[in-house]
Image 1 (cartoon, rainbow, N blue to C red):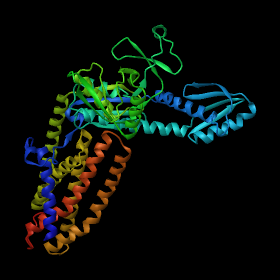
Image 2 (cartoon, rainbow, N blue to C red):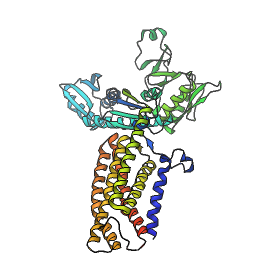
Image 3 (cartoon, rainbow, N blue to C red):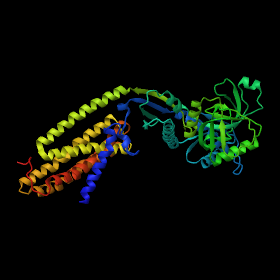
Image 4 (cartoon, helix red, strand yellow):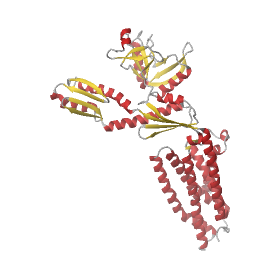
Length: 516
């Protein structure tokens, strides 16, 4: 008895999960964790962006780090300085000339030892070239792609955009789908900004003539002040990196002007305190993506790890900058290479056509099962409706997004569910014709058909899990609904159907109408 009650409870619970989706406006009667199923871009309308990760720029930036590491290895005084000249970056490779040809072998060994297996060191005479290995480059691309997806997700979530779909595509692309968004311009602007924040000291020794000439002294860069033609001479050395930023929020200063407040982690707070203690009455530049946001003068030490960025922001720009800083810097620039907008009207037409098709198909199944199996067919129809509701409810509970391929998965599942009912019914027919009583026939029919039903559904489940693992986009949507549908089909057809039939038979050997 307890087993039957548990089966009925699970079925009722699954149906209740689908109510907010089936009956719009009923969400208020349910807890917050029971929500309608999310509709995909093809059903709800919205925007789709295909972003490309600029790996060439990333490798050029990485080559700067490789240059510093190679130079440090060559001038390591503890191991003995190896004399070299003409060290330079060529693309994403580092080239240098070893002055003493006898030192070439030692220099190669030093570089491999100091830089590790992640680099390739080659020589041609006394010229040595250092570059990242193919494996390291592949790992860098994979890491950049996964980090880009996470950062893009954080930026979009911070804007309150609901149900975004963000996934990799083709090894170096990020596909972003934003259901319900009809104007993605602001999101494109936020996504496209690298948001690399850093704090530099200002070189006050640069004359106006040097600034006008554009020739920066060694160790200094001329960076533009944001929304201004003015150039600020900043030291190339980064005093505090945006990687040490823990939080940022839009706020107002004492003059009621929008600013962005920053909070550093322990390491960043230490560096920021050191910077502001040792350079009182000097200027430092707050640099974002090679643009100086502001270059204030340090009036007093700031030991608490909290700062404030001002730059003539509007409130909206302050909020956007806070989002960018809070979500972190992209490991490589992203560029929009394809943009597509799906109108809500097209999605509504698709849903309407889907409803008509589903209703027609379901009506045909109901009539077919009733004509073929009479009262047992009606029980199968009820179980089929419960199965459909459970697929929708469980999908909504797991946060799945319903798309057109997802609907195809549901339709396929319902077809398999019909088959899962027909198999035991036919076995029951065979048992009765062989002379068994009705109750014995029902018991034997479900028992002997279980293996066939399980084998058919589990093999399909394995295929759908493989599709989910290796597929992308619409294929994964199809695999999700199909996988959920197989599980609910096994539950409803093998357990719930038997409970309802037992209740209808009420322990009596009633005559079954479809058996002649």
